[in-house]
Amino acid sequence: MAAFPEGADQAVAAAEALVQEPHGSTVVGIFWFVVIAFMFFAQHHTCDVYFVPAINVFVDKMRGSKSTWLRRWGEESVAGATICALGCNGPELFSNLISLYTGSDAGIGVVVGSEIFNLLVIVGCSVVVAPVVPLQLEWLSFTRDCTFYAISIILLYGALRDRTIQFYESCILLFAAVCYVAAVYFTKDLEDCLNSKSGKSEPLLATSPSDTGEAASPKLKQGPSFQVIPGAPSGTISEKHIGTMHGVKVEVEEIFHGRIVDGHKSHIQGRYVDALANNTGTKTGDELNSQIDAFDRQVSEDLQLESECGTFWGPSLRYRHLKEVVVMGQGVIELEFEKGFMAGFLLEHITLKLTAATSTDRDHLLQHIEKHTLGRAWVHGYDASVKGSWSHLVHNLKDPDMSLFLKVFFCLPEFLIDACLRITLYKVDIKDINLENRWPLCFLGAMGWLAFFSWCMLECANQIHANIPWIPTSFLGITVCAVGTSFPNAVASIILSQQNKPAAAIANALGSNVQNVFLAMAMPWAIFAANYGFKDIPQDVAGIQEGVMWMVGTLLLVVIFVLIPPGFCALSTTYGWILNFVYVIYLVITMGETFGWWPPLMK
Image 1 (cartoon, rainbow, N blue to C red):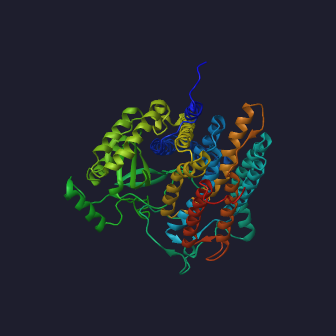
Image 2: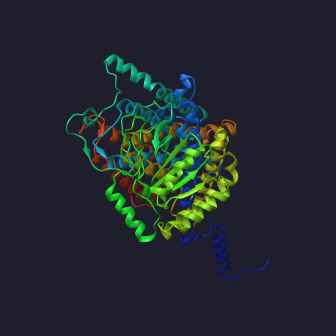
Image 3: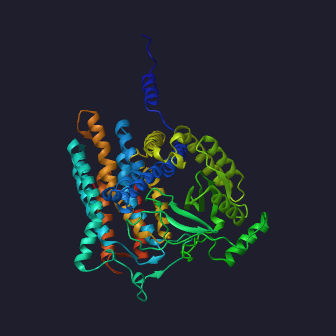
């Protein structure tokens, strides 16, 4: 063997070290941040367009069931805590499941980080943007959810304490999920029982004086653009609402877009539909915009639904926010109202599904809608194939009201994602009313895509760590991935609050947190253990146990806020800002511990 010159051995060793420990590029790592943001959007789009609509069809079928027991599953509170929880927690569930098979440290961090984000940011934002303060909560539901959330934290801490997950521990969590569902199912019965004993007929709400007609108290902060009348009892949805629009009798169904809630309503709680009687003709450019502005100044309610007795319901949706009119089969028209963007997400997106008795009535109604939108709304038929997605992209690219930034960073990614989904799901797309009976296949197909996008998200986190080694995947999971998967929930909570339903947003956030532990953690653990002979699952809990302690602290903080002034089971705007500020503190502390700025709070 040839002898190496002096010092060559050290050079060879250094070269081998470079080969064995490749150094990534910070620029490439930043690129993977862009890709992971794309995966967040893909998860949200899958939930909003296929996953949640399939769930909503199931809920509607339960509402229309002849069986009283099955109808209960269609109630908002029960459906929201059970089947709709899958729509809300789907990305977290699949992130944890995929991480077990890929060995990623980010999976459980996504769930724990989402818990903290939901309780601080979603609850905080819901209170901050609530149109009426102090925000009153349903004390019975709030007590139930807080109790089960506390139980979930205790069980989670016990399971993680020895750094391994045993099969029986995941089964205990799943059993607790069944108990929670049962508690939600029978909450209304308990409420009725307590009301009968107390001699009250109204629901057990911590009602605000404004609801009872008393003078002074809650302060009206703002008038939301899309409003509903609060106080409708849960579980009263059985028939579609009948009204008249432009002289045509229609059934009206409203759909709120956002996976945090069961956004499918078959009744109207206060708005809609009347034509602008004096709006005729077609105008373009500045002349059209000035006329639209004049309409807004002269008419406060652009669209209003007239009841059968000749009265109108509540505030209105504005024609200026009507972006699309989708002509379906069987006398159905869908009106798409959109307002505002934040990071590529619509801040307000509501669909009105109008069903006329005949196609002739539908066409007559369509003529009035086209006339009063002054040609600004895009009127088209629904196409579940990729062709429909392409048509939607072309329309958005030609839209003069949409900025170049949104066209590049929102419309193009949306087209890529939507095209992939349509290629595989167009035969089971339940948005086509003729395919609604195929909702189970749509549900399963959306689950498959969610699993794929969750895997891609975790791989992106691994690539970020590989290229920027000082950012661990566990930190990415508990912060970046958690915020990314929960951000659509935060947007949806803002929408609900602006619609004067912040209490519903808070209730759904708490219920989502409970099911995050009971389902998004326990179900993947049980599935993984069953596939590997029910062996114990090693679990890296670095930073996770501290996250569990943050879950405890944030829950106690919220409970304290609802017990102290301004009133029992009430939250003020100040408390909302405090909750958001606490989340900022949490992020700063977590970053400092990760990057070695100070020692961890828990070793």
